[in-house]
Image (cartoon, rainbow, N blue to C red; front, side, top):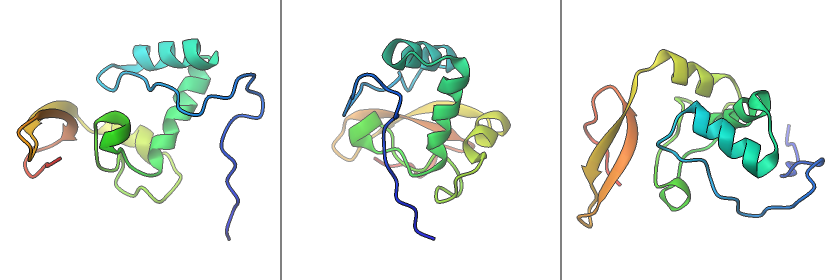
Amino acid sequence: PDVTFHEGRVDATVHRTNPDLPNPHGGIEQVVDFFDAAFDFDVREAVAIMGAHTLGRARPQNSGFRNPWVRDSHLLNNGFYEDMVERTWRQHTFTNNDGTQSTQWVHGPAQGIHA
């Protein structure tokens, strides 16, 4: 069935249309600190909101990264958390088509990644 999606927290006191994002090169400490400072989230709320990575994909214009974070980015499940725990992740630097350098989180061989 189709479900109408309404973005935003109903309990938020301030509306933010385009907040900064947590440092994508940081770890859980930076994520928790960001959501605490920006939204007054506790650790549980910060970890829960990161589950949004289960849906959709990273886009270079938003985060500098591209591609889905999970194997099946059309299902709302624990896929993001499972991938964070079960896979070995590392940062890979590569050259874009325009000659600039970018960094992408990868698992396994880093071949075939293009911006």
